[in-house]
Length: 463
Image (cartoon, rainbow, N blue to C red; front, top):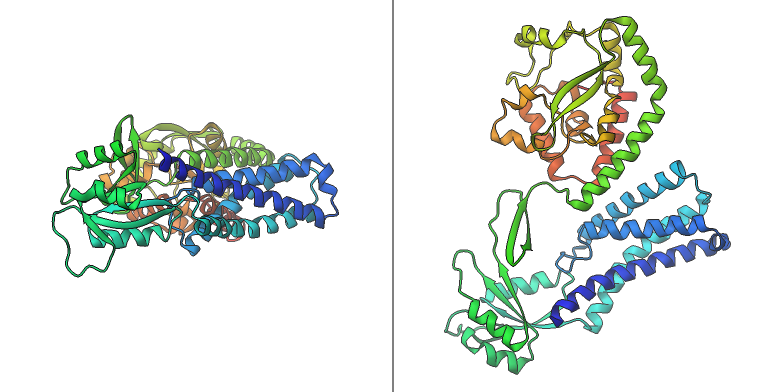
């Protein structure tokens, strides 16, 4: 138990240092800005929100996890994404929604100071913990020489403060000419523990040659040590694996969708905030469009169609009607002109079902604006995969279903990487999978900017 608490303290220490360095950034910005912010609650709330959200995003990216590999380029990448995502939220809420009275000069100085000090915090914290070895846990490995060398290499690149004293073999023979700190065999476990003041034992559990470790783990429990079993989980393509527990059962969880609970919450907040913003900004254009559709042709203003969303859930997708009233019935007659050979999507040039107003609102993507309400109500996201129809999904093979593992979006990688020019459904699926495998808030932001560029600069409508 003592060793477990030590590792928990390391996580807290990293977070505490980030908070302290964030406060230091606030103080620096206040001093440069002539100390005006010390007496203004808006300044304090904005900076506190920034620091808190960065901690949340860092935790979400496992930057405080003792097992995360501390490769500088990877760590800087994660930290930068957390910093941008957190402060994007703060900037939108504080300046565009809350209209707070924080001076731009102060805010910019604070952000620059905060980013630099967060980088300094990571290196300073690691240097302090490794230099002082306050939390260093004397560790023994049970396994092979290659296991020992690999574990040492891993520990050098993560935040787990473990001092590996040596290793013992699972067999009963001593390796010849071994220049590593080989301390004996597993039968010598108790003696090795006593002679070397061991705090915890790592047991290697190889998938191909599993060893019954029960009695040895029980011995560690009797001696008051921490026992960790290092398993070799199955590797399945690009799937991520996470080891946790369900009750008393250890569980290896495999998944290839990057969104966890925190990421889903962040994405949802982002969706709600921007969908409300979009509804307000485009309220007048939507009203004008509704009137134009009503004058141009018979039928309802809003076209509602059953689409397939997250993991097969059905929902009604809203669009401004851009076709004649009986468009769905006429679709069967036009299937022979479908540009997508597989029939898993429908696309054709000069679709005769499109009305005069429909051509304009499709070209400008105005027909998609009602989908802001889909996003607000939770059936869609701003950025996601293309929402398929029920009859399209009925033709899916197993490999196509993964694109339904996240919510569909108004726009997505399929739209900004080719839009209406894409006629190969497998290419659409590949783009959707690429988005799912590499999701981040920053990727969503980039896709949204690309979409705006496509619509307003290149004047290409949605597919």
